[in-house]
Length: 142
View 1: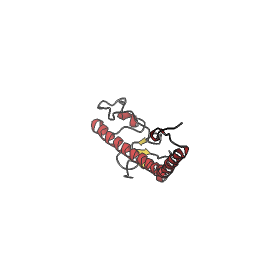
View 2 (view 1 turned 90 degrees about the vertical axis):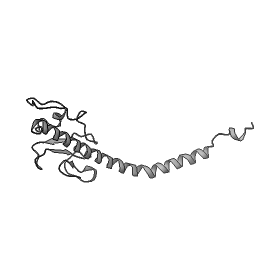
View 3 (view 1 turned 180 degrees about the vertical axis):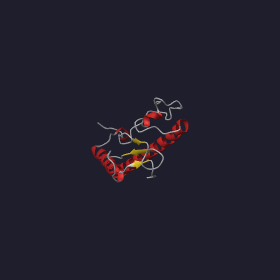
View 4 (view 1 turned 45 degrees about the vertical axis):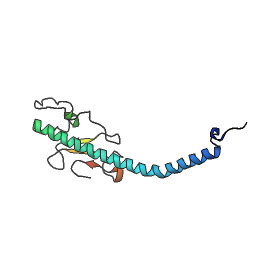
């Protein structure tokens, strides 16, 4: 069977070379991308904490006070009982989990000034830690 050059298929050797190049590329690029994913999660958590603080400021302007610890961040979406001046919702969507799938912590009165404390516990979901496990808090720009 005599085929023309343009009708030839890919040989097994050519296919193995392509697969090897793709595997090498993935081995070199994947670890770098994972580091960027962790940084992106920290940045997203910081942005979400800042968004909560902005919404809490608007809540206080309308009501004269921040939501209590018991009311929590949910008071930004659902009108608390006995809050006549509430003009929300103050956030366009339900309160999300942090980028690692844990709930944000809210406390008012806070322990770090006159504003409430909003905390993301990081990747480990436990207080403290460093790197990806470090807490992201409303009273620091970390």
